Image (cartoon, rainbow, N blue to C red; front, side):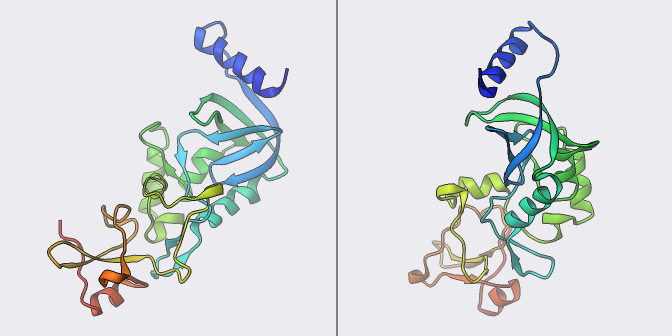
Length: 227
């Protein structure tokens, strides 16, 4: 019986109340897909309760410059655990048939660590246990919170993720969207700041633009959203 079959059997037993113990996977990390997904042996594990930026996702740093935050976040986790032993306490199976787990490297809770350092956010619609860690990371402007970013779930919902989870992105790193609404108002949207950022599409043929900095947008005649 392979490890997936074993896990499936264990999870059914736990769900039925036949066993009370937590299923545990101990092993060497074979691959770090991104900052919330790893592989041990042939088992894909999704870190429970957190959501990290997509590998190709860009964010803005404290000076307003774009940087590859998805790669940075994955690099933090990769440096900690790739080719090293971890312990994962299984909590369930997600809709993509990945094992959900809280994972540990030594005494470090990796899920909590990534949120506390600002390289992942609490996935609050599924789990609230890391909300306090997120609050402190945001307060101290750690990781993603040093500047502006689109929450990973909003980024995916906007349809910007293509094959192999690598999203389309601006090659020049300019992420501020200069939109023109139906009234002709010119409004700029900053990732992580504007609630309409993910839903805004830029059509340059209509005169809409991408900007590298907020001051550039203002100088060109665009304004911040109201309300």
